[in-house]
Amino acid sequence: MSAAGPRIRRGSLHGGGLCVATSARCCGGYGCVVEAWDPKLERAVALKLCVNDKPDATALLLAEAQTLAGLSHSNIITIHDTGHYEDSLFLVMEFAGGGSLSRRALRDEQMHWRRLVPIFADVARGLAAAHGEGVIHGDIKPSNILLRGDGRPLVADFGLARIIGAPPLLPNAIGTRPYAAPELLRGADRDSLSDQWSFFVTLWECIDRRLPFISNRQLRDELLTLTDAGVLQLIEQWTWSAAKQSEVPQAFLDVLATGLSLERSERFGNMHAVAEALDQ
Image (cartoon, rainbow, N blue to C red; front, side):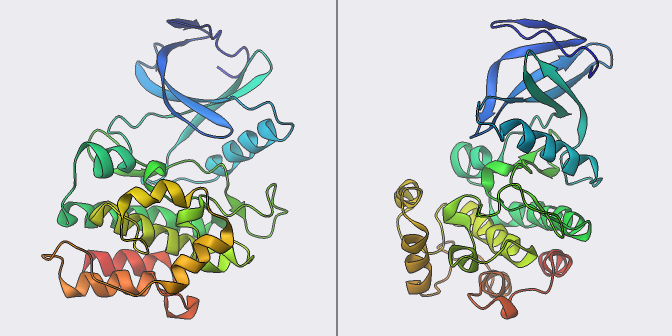
């Protein structure tokens, strides 16, 4: 597929060994993901296409491909190949047919906390594997956690990933602001503990259908327009309160409280410990 690349046209798209669906699954600042079919291997795949004409867009997408190529875990999205359409790079990736947690947990259905706990334990294992390879995801949120048809979660979208010890392509990136750790909003570098904060904000939102430090779910979109200082102020003024679902046990609330500690030293030591706590 990489040698010639698929011919991609508007409508029902064919060529280069791939048949490409017409509807986009997800579009972000640099890439748009569409469903495709590989007739040679008879499997669905996902194509991430570069849709941004900024000079660094292709470099960022290539960096994501290289990052994913160095990761191998059952809870991390798999990259199969890369190619070019005209002058644009695309990635050929594993297709997750179950949608994202943004759709499943927040929009289509409200998953019970008992169903979410094992999902997030697996997500924690995927992040632990990435951290073990020196990869900081940098943008954990519900839309970046995908579900396979069998329910297995996959950590996806490593477009903002930081490789520890390597010069960052986006040195000041903090990910999606409402999920960013307070230390990032103060100007610190991304690391495994900031990923942990984003993980627990995501878990809280999937359980309670709101972010932990705002009382109204509708305010989430407004947070996207706030400055770093504005979001940081909300977090620093936040008073811990239990999730609305009264059946959530205290032991689980204690896990949430640890992962969402404003003091980094009071969070879990690593994502392996997070997975173990959720398993228990």
